[in-house]
Length: 336
Image 1: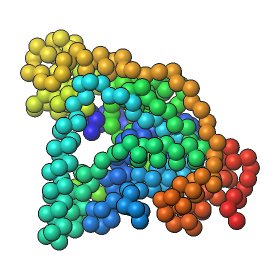
Image 2 (image 1 turned 90 degrees about the vertical axis):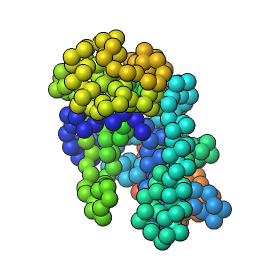
Image 3 (image 1 turned 30 degrees about the vertical axis):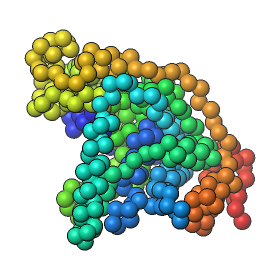
Image 4 (image 1 turned 180 degrees about the vertical axis):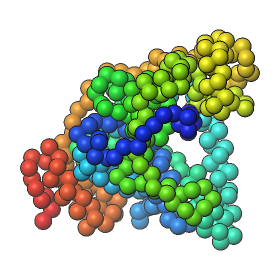
């Protein structure tokens, strides 16, 4: 879920062209959950091969990554490691998924396809097998994969702060709390979003959020930004009843420090000091980013031979990638 404070953050729309030649660290788990949620059949069923294995995550990763690579964006996918012991979402998410599964079944029985699809989007579950499949596909595409020691967004933030990448790509604002200088939301070549409860779709363009501008416009420090996020609620604490982004901002401006803020509210969840310290000094390492070799034959082996994607479409994209990947060795057209 992540911290929900984006509505009050200064941001600007940018074009994909502005990211050409720039490296971007991607929060891999967030994108994979997104693909599992939205890439589905009309009745809400995820894409599957003939063996019943879910393939929505592979479809999303392959086509979005290929489109961004062709636009000149350099991608580095960062995968989550071990979460902190106080991470708060596991039990809550399990309960929500069970409820969503019941609503999905009821909607299908009633013949309400729209309601069925809406409920189904809340039932996605990322498995270890999916993670390994995704890492393999990305590396076959010549895209670096980084394994974070803990939270992926914390590792992304360090990579950006260390100037190894231009920005972090994520829908959540957590990476700003972790200290990333720049965050890109809605990173996609073309994007549309359905308005809640309506059959209306609107265009969605990439947005750039810069930490220094956030702090300057809100008139707070990064420490106070972290406190504000904690009041709204994060993946590590449930937030404080009645506190949205605006009310939280007002309180941190008035009280300044975590100690003084805690004196004004009823805190629930893990120790506030532990959550604060985790955001300010998260487990993240100076990891070596290795450029894997582009391997078109292995892309086809995984996507076509193993998971039964249509050969013609996959070959077309592989040919296009062969024209631009440095490790392709100037092969030009690979598939005849």
